[in-house]
Length: 269
Image (cartoon, rainbow, N blue to C red; front, side, top):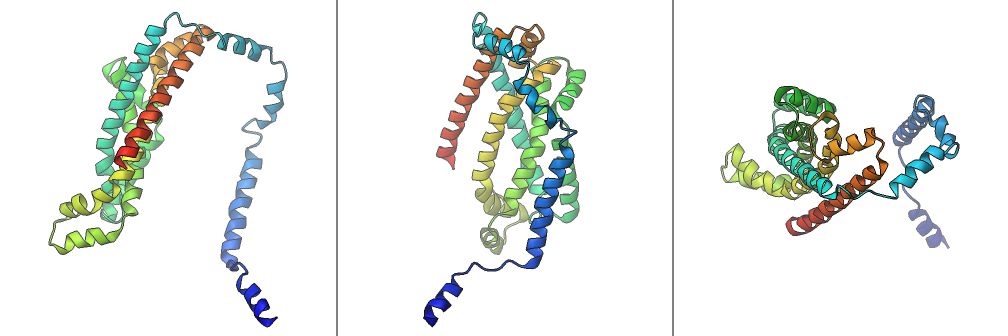
């Protein structure tokens, strides 16, 4: 009997420290308070309107289920241009993110350099790509190049942060092993750091390529070319049947890109 009691006592879950319990209460309680405070400003009280006076929504839906394929060849060409913008934007972003990721990692870069680089990445991530794109439109004129540069800078900041976090999570053993051979700092990075983070970096880059294929459509709003420009022209003219066709082309393209990315990841990672 005593052994059974001892065994039952040993199976009890470990008690959490009081500090952790207080932190959890403050965290989740603060989130609940924030949701309540944001209820009015976010206009969540308008939710019932989705089920009232839905004639406009029904009209939109009727047009949307009858896509107009008259200009399908144009949509495919513009979607292909959008994919090319996303490809070049992501490629340039990766080139930018590699030095940023290494310079922003605590276990690779000196604190002073790391601080400056992390603030730079914050700026690149926080400025919307539409704003960056507008700057390049003013510099080089309308067209895809402005969209490419907007994607490159914004994505470079995002990937730089992800790359630096991957570097900070590496195993120090291989790096110390390379250092023991008398290698330079650069050789430590090339032979001790890069092989460990390359799979994650590849995965992050492919994911951002998928995201940029969608984000590039929005850049058409500022005249950066691609299918986004055709989409917004159709929206402004209330040609919802054409909008439906364009949306389906975008869905198919993004799905194919996702399948391609999965195939590449399975080969490389």
